[in-house]
Length: 466
Image 1 (cartoon, rainbow, N blue to C red):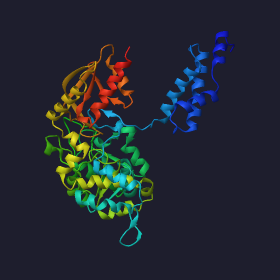
Image 2 (image 1 turned 30 degrees about the vertical axis):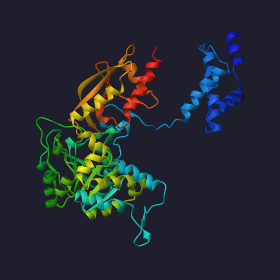
Image 3 (image 1 turned 180 degrees about the horizontal axis):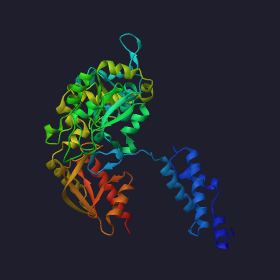
Image 4 (image 1 turned 90 degrees about the vertical axis):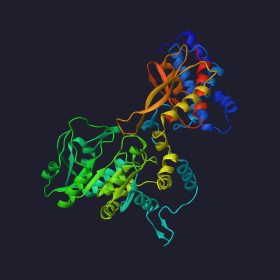
């Protein structure tokens, strides 16, 4: 490509890499690695060259190159995984890190992360121990199960259990429970990967006990019940309860597994919300194996918890997949601290952020909304109190909409989409939702200190506004 005279002139005025690097060494934090500064200098100069070739460059002197390179350095030095403000009202937001940890869990992670621990060391015998012993007794105490273990997530728990219990055999499942969760994770696919043979019974909306009974053959290895935690079928429906399925399983010598999905130790019906099946109820009904998540309604770290009859748990532990799916010491530390709070349900609801936010009353959200409006006073924004709804999220309680007082925010000369994008691009990203061309901040999911971060972000946006 032949360059024009003005392009040649601009290319000649570009500083060299060494010149730009020297300038960065003076202007940037001395703790910035030289490798980052060098890469930024080269990247900035390459961007300027491309701009010249595309006739988009007007200034390419050292000052322009330095400004561009400093921006690149700032971006490179910022953590990719960063804090955000959740103003969406979705409590267990899958894309925003799911459940927030209780302070007790956070403190245990700190205590264990920078010291040695008895992760797999039995302090009584002085010999190798099981990492599950840190939480097994607690899980059994809370759930009423005979035995328990933990893997990295509930998808892993389901895969591990099926691989252990039904490889080469049939697992009988209702068609209405062949769920798909996030990331196209489907029960039929997990079944195939485990080596089990899926045997569907019933119809999408109605399955009867005699459907399960009629499916029994010499190849039947398991009755699998899957809780439809992320959707509901309403209207002309029929489902077999876990108690009915257990009764049939015991009569015919077939184990029963109950995948609860999100899973909960708390009956939300006691707090004026729709009830979800609890782990304790499934265990009390006699399920041989129950699986559920640790990081959704339970309010702990990402984990898949398996509880049930001792003989089955022992077999699952011996499965070679167990090692591939095991959790690390920080997850164990966090999970143990979270579980200890469940010894007193009132304390759990008070101290575990997920439970606290879901059970937060509408009047409390109104107080929060008024506090946010006060924090934004003096800024060039219009705030409106709106009675809307929040959601539990995390693939749980799909029909539940929790009344919540929200703050609608508008700014002159900026549409809702532009304001949402600007908030998302803030130093601490503010994540909101848009309704009726208004940015909505649901105060249910705001944390201590978030009001100040929102005010700072809006102030910066207003100052940069055309």
